[in-house]
Amino acid sequence: MAILNRMDWYDLARSTNWNPTYVTEGELFPPQLSGDYNLPLSAWESYDEPYKQTYPEYVKVQREKDAGAYSVKAALERSRIFENADPGWKSVMKAHYGAIARGEYAAASAEARMMRFSKAPGMRNMATLGCMDEIRHGQMQLYFPHEHIAKDRQMDWAFKAYDTNEWAMIAARHFFDDIMMTRDAISVSIMLTFSFETGFTNMQFLGLAADAAEAGDHTFANLISSIQTDESRHAQIGGPALKILIENGKKEEAQKRVDIAVWGAWKLFSVLTGPIMDYYTPLEHRKQSFKEFMEEWIVAQFERALTDMGLELPWYWDIFLNDLSQTHHGMHMGSYYWRPTIWWNPAAGVTPEERGWLEDKYPGWNDTWGECWDVIIDNVVDGNMAKAYPETLPYVCNMCQLPILGTPGKGWNVKDYPLEYNGRLYHFGSEVDRWVFQQEPERYAGHLSIVDRFLAGMIQPMNLEGALAYMNIAPGECGDDAHQYAWAEVYRALRAAKKAG
Image (cartoon, rainbow, N blue to C red; front, side, top):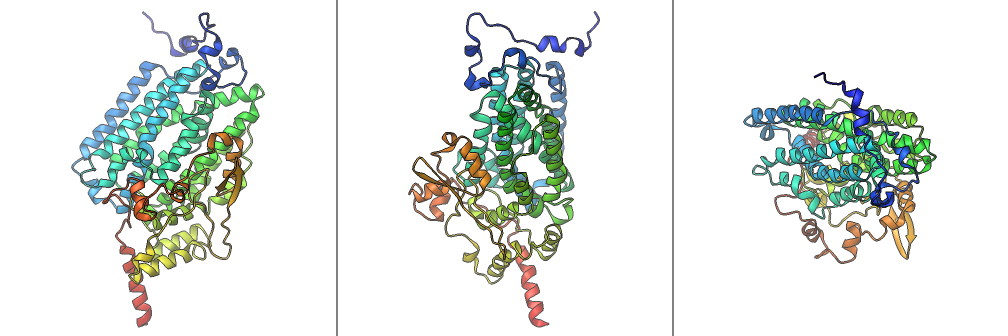
């Protein structure tokens, strides 16, 4: 019996909409879950997914991917890659697993919402495969770090992080709950798959896989590559949905969802990816600065994607482009100074050679961030370690849940953007964060940041020790300098040579 070409039957087989008779359309597709855009089913039936795949094809490809990733892991288990890796690279893995692994499981729920409640048949089919993707990603990124727990307690945060009150995880949950867990199916497709995955994570995973291979960690490189090829497929779910909304006069609603999600994704990237690329990665392995990577792979790609869709660049695009040179430096310094409150060991990344590289990539770095690092360096070199650790918490933004930043030096520009709502004063780190809050204040109002909880007396005792207990950071899990302050010996030698000369 002849087998039909897939494209001869695919569109017919996946067009599974029907006119319900036992229930109303509103009961079959509740607006709160499906999206209340007042568009008929016929409009959603025009959804045309760019990546068409059948279930047998999916299973075959995924089996091959799993075989490859797990085979490489088994072959390299005795190579002691983890033990011999640069401490900065170990921190990259710890930060990634903690921030991402359980988030992948959450994404499976988001895909399931599109799979069940989207009115677009093509989206339901793609989301079915996407849901299985995300379950696979979560399982792999919990299994791979598990073998290292006996060697390093911080690796346990791959599983533990999302169950804690650690400040970075509060920020991650706040963002992912917003775009994945509390939105209708169409909004999820726009905010998660188009804005976050197409705009950010797809390129992030490509870069991370390349960095892992450069660092000699081929197990991690194969794992991330295996995941990225899934992301590149289901990240395309949101594009056709955007097209339908725009064609049916819903451009404003679509634009707003893109603008909200892109800003939140950027803030998370600035605290995770930026420091990894510009500070944690050993100097000899750095191919691009974070800013160069963002401008080439994220900014350029996203501008093209928005233009192709008929959308505008977010109204804050100039603010975002300016922040590419600044924000992640502040996030890195904050994470390093408050290192006991994170689950990995940040690499300072400020040897004279590294500072030269930073100055070359970010002209003026030494006169801004460098001056702050001079103080930390002097305290460490002088043995004043108490001054190299925090005594309390920084103030954080009530939207992104990350520290409010400014650029140090002569252009010191830290600013609070306050807003009073229902008798409570909220504080924001930028006009964009405040704008996001104002779009749906009822969605965000009432949430207490880690500092709000501290000031409300929910953290006892009211000091760093009490904060660590509240964040569920046990002894042996607190972050500290990745290289055990080896970089300080370089500055001691320079100081001694200067005195002698």
